[in-house]
Image (tube, rainbow, N blue to C red; front, side, top):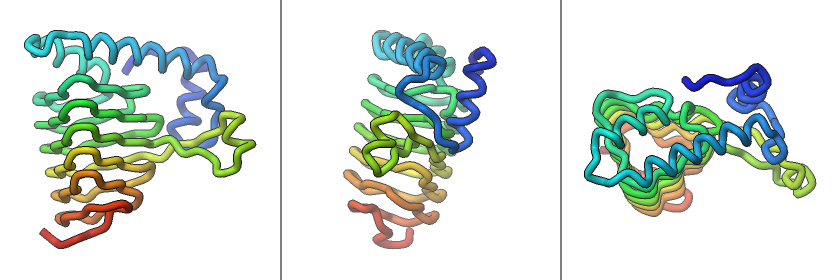
Length: 192
């Protein structure tokens, strides 16, 4: 994990524990965000044929990886160190992970193009939202999950082992293991 100073660690602990924090005027968190954005920019500008360089940098960005992973460019995340991927992880182009809370992907997870995983939560009342208050909830994706293109996974969701999520779905609540689920909101269509 990257090195952080004491103030940054306090703010990170609040953010990652699901407690409310100030996301708009927090120089400690904004500094970390900017450094991660720079690393994502570097990753996205590596020649696609330079597999070794891409793999080395994505392993630096992410908190934990298996030996075998492939993330097609472009890729975007907020912090990176809050993302864990298992063995044989594959993400197609334009994966977006807002990892204010932990985002965990199991082994043999396949993600279609233009998929998004969002952990931040924002207040419904405009005054609190305009003040930059937010909190975050973790996302867990089990082993052997396949997500079609343009899937959005919302904060606090767990997708069970072996589930298949249909293209274009918006996953707002937990999906059990070994089912086909799709829609907006995403719901179980059948057991697999």
